[in-house]
Image (tube, rainbow, N blue to C red; front, top):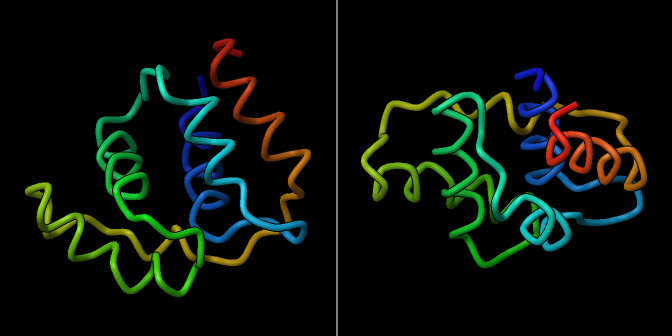
Amino acid sequence: MDQLIEIMVLRVLCLGTPQGSVKETGKSLLRDYHWQNALHQVLWNAICAIPSENPEILRQLLPAQLTRLGFPDVEWEELFAPHSISREEAISLMRRMVRGE
């Protein structure tokens, strides 16, 4: 699996799509996914531990959550860079990850 797709999906989980959040869908689709990049796994765990789909709340709470997980120095800011991925595209990317494409 392309690690670029993993980071794109993490960004979509944080920011949502123009059609709304895909965090709950992502948590369901990717619950058993083996992340190719260990840092992506850490980010995934932190994002899922925050009980909000609101990008501003995620942005505020993510650094503290990463610190609680033992990763205070993780670069997370890129997860909040604007993107133009639609809900349909995001779900398609997640399904590709699960299938290993």
